[in-house]
Length: 257
Ligand SMILES: Nc1ncnc2c1ncn2[C@@H]1O[C@H](COP(=O)(O)OP(=O)(O)O)[C@@H](O)[C@H]1O
Ligand SMILES: [Mg+2]
Image (cartoon, rainbow, N blue to C red):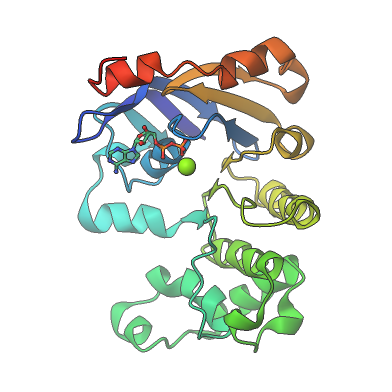
């Protein structure tokens, strides 16, 4: 269970990116976070995996407060949080298999992992992860030989190889064409359901959010303005999420509107 409890983020330049955001994601639940560019979606995801420390509030994952962890304790938790990036973040000169094995790196002890030496168990986990996104047949190819959709499947396999306790994806299909976007979202949400872990996906495309996610959270100017099922996302809710009113954001930034 993921609990976001009144989280606020003010960046050093004074931008208030999140204002008292609260939401809960249950094990196996897939939540889409939607909103305009600049609404605070990426900031929220970075707080969830501890890259960004909130200015106020707390985030708990299975009862453990991520927001207060530091150093080695934080790295241990981050090792089990699968993160899927818009631009895949693969090591292009390495093989597909080695990229997925990178998901095991934090689990290995230091010296073997420095030399990218993996245990038999790590290799088995990587093979199973590739199988689950139908990419095992590409295991020995270099990552730069893959199409965008295939790269993102490898990104998903790498996250799975972390044996994740939570999955986070920041605009995972924003670089793909519409048809591939549907396929990759289908893969991602299938494996997320199988894993049974809390899953949060920042996504632009409302149709995809509605088709694949259990719940939709709408953020506008750092505030949760909608939290409900896809069916409850009415046109008026959409208007609230996407209403173009830059003044509050400008005020928060200390700029006169
Ligand atoms: N590192 C940063 N320093 C200062 N301001 C930032 C930083 N990252 C994001 N912002 C600002 O915070 C707000 C939210 O950004 P972000 O979380 O990236 O939104 P989204 O992902 O919804 O597009 C925006 O106004 C953005 O310009
Ligand atoms: Mg973003």
